[in-house]
Image (cartoon, rainbow, N blue to C red):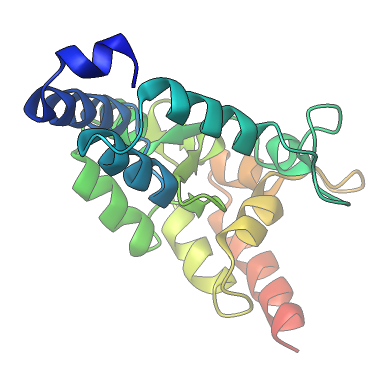
Length: 194
């Protein structure tokens, strides 16, 4: 055990872990199962901080699996979706609680994307002048009839189609052309569902 672990009591270790997890939640993040397991091992004195740090370093620096996105190959979804808010930052931006933001995502009033590691993200493009784009919920309700994938809906709204004018469906919503977007959404949702 490291010197720090001999000095700190179980209660001090517990307080430290709770403070760290609280800080993560304030940043819109949630601890993974591995992080929770590691935290309990540290709290109970089964592992030192140095052992845990080395474990985490090994877990996150292993050789990527074949076909996995690496630092040299950026995730294509980042370019497709663009910048995103966390739950916390979206709540702050809209002046709502985190629970209200999550409810809006679940009710299709906002596009809410869930990453592989369980983090919820909200694409910035769904806001215009600091407010949710008018008509977004109507469009999402139509799109979900064809495919139940918020990632696909985000792509449909934000990817530029070269021959279209304007090239992005979200731009039509910015311009107040809801009927046109609904018509396109119905067509594509029908095609996805076929």
